Length: 152
Image (cartoon, rainbow, N blue to C red; front, side):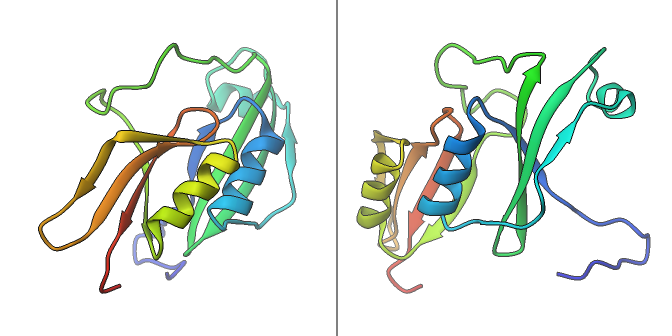
């Protein structure tokens, strides 16, 4: 991906609030193959609090990257992270999931479960082209879609 565009704009990352930073780093690094790409930051300044719409804030964050896509994991000390009841519906407007093409679906499903994630077996699908897929959850319930393509 090029960092330069005629308009000067570029995509930088997707931010995800997590309830346990170390657990989430381990999941995305050890299970899904992300790499920590920048030093961890502790953000408490008024400008950042204003940008993120809090009167005051203490958040630790880390950037992870895979396949030139960067995610930002944010762990809030102040205000406390809010955990929703139940799974977020896929038809709720907003970001819905992360998606991965995988080489061995069964192996990754086992690793997700061992790494603190959850597999949603009722979402298992086999498509006309022979692809298989399933929806899983990271340790905080964020959906992670897995699609295995036999010809990939």
